[in-house]
Length: 230
Image 1 (cartoon, rainbow, N blue to C red):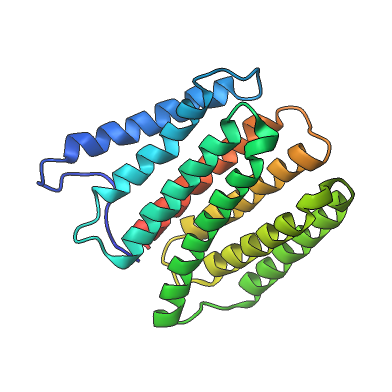
Image 2 (cartoon, one colour):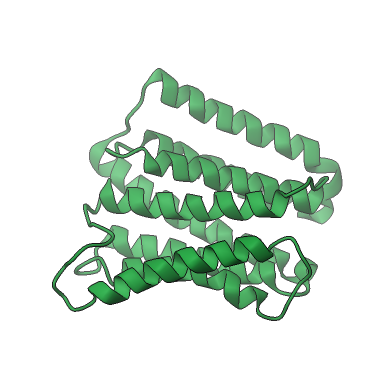
């Protein structure tokens, strides 16, 4: 899509900064993974903000001329970072809806990227991709039905959010990219969000927080790499 290499010498004097941001993102992601699921601590929101926030900065200084798709990708990663912070604040119930809103906007930014590409190059449709989209929609409906009793006043926002996720995944699965990372990233993002919903409104299971973070971070990384290289 952007055909921009993530790392490697570009001769603009920012190569060291790019490598540093990549290492910072990876290291802080692993640190957060080791700390998640435990008791809240004051540095949690800031530690959680660094991994994807560093990826946003990495993209911002890697794309020449601020192309439209590049700006949307930076926006999607920045909005995801905001969602990370909201969901890591101490009063989780108070800030959850703000986190939901930030991630909703991030999904919309990814949808805008896919819509732009689809409008210019058409959709890549085959039986396997169509079946995958249908499966994603069915799983989302099944999860919503399963959690419906515990959603309360959050039923409508969660329903809207799930619908947007399915649209994002459908776009990722049908966009004519030359790399599988986009589809994989979108599917992992949906899995991560599904586990958040289960943890928040259903019955949390062992290691759910670790799985949420691992799938989420990989989702952001794969989407970023896929969009840059696709």
